[in-house]
Image (cartoon, rainbow, N blue to C red; front, side):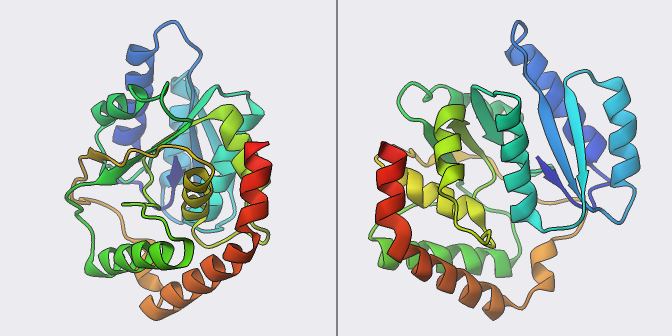
Length: 239
């Protein structure tokens, strides 16, 4: 779970997910890993206080590197501790923990499972970028993924390691898209399971700080360049 300037909801979200994990997996060693991406508000202080109180919480603080970088570092931390399954979600309180069960029920059928925001409550700029990326992936890679960048995904740990080994360097702006493309091309069923997406009630959306066209152009260039490497990377993942 990446977090950036979420002081108004971070306590609620952390308690929700750590309680959910204890209830869902009472006999298993499950941990919520929160990557604080250099928050400038009170998020760091609140997370440190929560870390002292909650035994299935791990807090990692890093310099601000952006949402994608925080997600990647969260994956790496999860793999370091030998996670059998890795689930990623966001800290902005726009998702419902009960929807996790929809993905968990499919774990025997795929090593990489995506939800998709059936009714998405986001700013118009983010909706535009999602549509742009969906069209780009379809045209560049010849494959359709409903919500390739969704922060609500379940991945088997061993398969995630293979994907991470093939992630482009330098790290792309939206690494979750590249992981989804590689997973789909390597033969995994992604399912595109409909999940609830709520209105954001707190915090700010970092993407609006970017110029819309700069985001789209950068993402398009990264995806186009990655097309030349994809076949070799898929072979490595299947090996």
